[in-house]
Length: 88
Image (cartoon, rainbow, N blue to C red):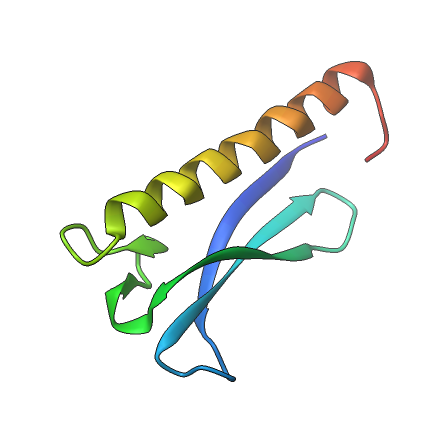
């Protein structure tokens, strides 16, 4: 099976100055699953093209590291389940 885990940032409807970041988890043959992350920052500091915070802006290094770590943890867990043959 093939799968993907990606980040997606959108302007928060309740707090328009902030970005709401979700993980989009997809597995072939299944519906996409969205999981909102507790990582936030200013919308003006979010780069929609690369789906991360613009380097050299406030808290960009910390937030991008958190995003990367979270993404890595999900990918690692899914890879484990795939090796074990679990239907996740």
